[in-house]
Amino acid sequence: MTANIEKIVSLSSDKSLFSVIDKVLEEKRLSLEDGIKLFETDDLLTVGALANYVTEKKNGKYAYFVINRQINPTNICALDCNFCAFATMDKNDPKAYEMSYEEIIKKAEYAVSQGACEVHIVGGLHPDWSFDVYLKMVSMLKERFPQLHIKAFTAVEIDYFSRISGLSYEDVLTKLKEAGLGSLPGGGAEIFAPRVRRIIAPTKIGWKKYLEIHRTAHRLGLHSTVTMLYGHVETYEERVDHMLKVREAQEETGGFTCFIPLAYQPENNQLNITEHTHGVDDLKTIAVSRLLLDNIPHVKAYWVMVGEKIAQVALNFGADDMDGTVMEEKIAHFAGAKSPTQQQKEKLVRLIKEAGKIPVERDTLYNHIKVYE
Ligand code: V47
Image 1 (cartoon, helix red, strand yellow):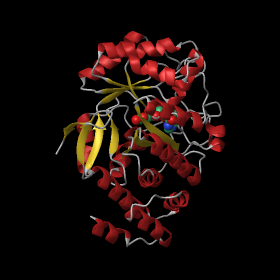
Image 2: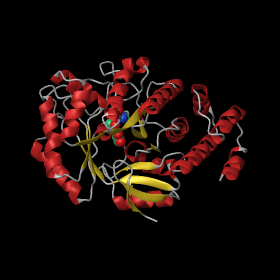
Image 3: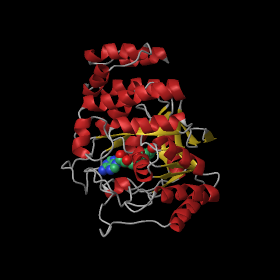
């Protein structure tokens, strides 16, 4: 394997990459400058080959998917992020909605009937819902479907629950865990740099609180994922800085299972950026994530946001996970995503096999449910 990768990368036409290539092959940690070089090079294939080499050293030929369902209980939200097309602050907006407990149960029931092991719940910060409403959602689902993993509430929601209940982050997370919460999803990270947050999400919590909440969850024995929203006003340096802050937090707790670059979807929002991300940038961002985040076990190519074709190719550019069946996607589709809103298991298996990888149906924490040799 090493001989082959050395042959491949020796073909690189970009001299500025040589020192980075050496570091990767010698398993040395990459720096901010290395990350920027990887983004700035035109030699996408070398960056991809290196990232694939690292992925295969970590996870062999396995590429993961999960039978899951997303549930977004409401889109009424006290925040007004400029990139978000999903949420509304106005309860009378025609697109505003609230789900009842019964509707949530029905959606979970359908998911279980389709073989789901996970529900992924995120939504608006509803100005009239108390923390008890959200707690009941979790306890009710856990009572009814004890086998289901409840991956719910981003750090932004946890911060909101803390503010409306007067409880500390630790107490909010402990109560949710006691009610049946299995893990935290990674939404809300956006780009950590304050310059970018001021433009795209000026009223959202900053990176320090985001990571403090994840660290607290990890200390309580909950795992979580972590995201990065790219393709809008951020620079390469700000992307790399985001990744390095994630790497530092992971060094302390080890609680992140997966890093998920989220490609910006440009429609129906208040940012004046109307371009979708391009394939080269999607693949490079996934590859650089894999190379910089040496202490994160998995990198996800989220088919909803990059599309099925790029997600499939990304399995040879450092990604080893495609997320899942999803069943009902709203956040990206309100913002103009061109992908389907759900996926069949068979299709995910085929996409992975055709990428030359071995499909593995996983649970939320990457335990193998079924290997499709
Ligand atoms: O928090 C919102 C982002 C996130 C847009 O944890 C947008 O495994 C692109 O976090 N363009 C929700 N992105 C989705 C998410 C996620 C998805 C799949 C798996 C996991 C995981 C997490 O989507 C939001 C926000 O960061 N988002 N609007 C937009 N216009």
